[in-house]
Length: 215
Image (cartoon, rainbow, N blue to C red; front, side, top):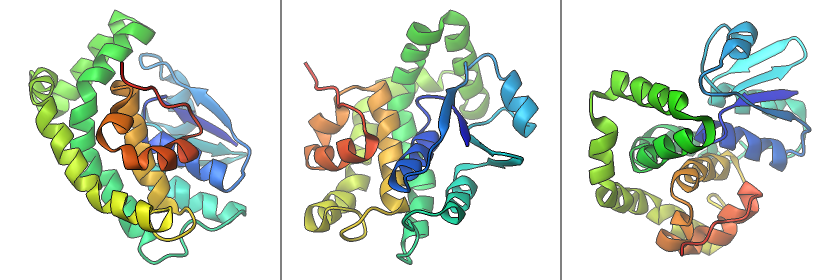
């Protein structure tokens, strides 16, 4: 299997976590933001993530995670609320977390892939959300930080109580929420440790990556 992704994508991070939890081997391919020819060739579109499994191509992260359930390993969807919380994280939590992260992602895009990539990133977001949206979100960062923390409060309590979002083992709900935090960390290194420290061990264990601590 191959996973085509943008490294910061919360949806790609969700899929990677599922692959880890299900112990499925997969080659991860980082797609340059301004060079999407392979995406078009493979999937007919320019969005990520895209999973390629032999002749099977799956787009859209909920469809990918559902497909992975057919590939063996522990089920991540046994709890009836697991797909519901995946949808909540992918839509409602993402709306706020994305606005929190977006200004930092723009800056990171410029550092990592150059000015052309940064400008394309900005153009894509402004076409969807309006001119000046990233600048406004930067001004409102404290507001979106507070909103993200408030949305995560039930997740914090659940993880404190049982170790995972829906009990004593990881599910698609954990992968989806951790995927959103992966995006925030990509933009604002140290945010999890600073703002939701109770989630730090859970997040690190799922993300398989060292957490950046704030200065």
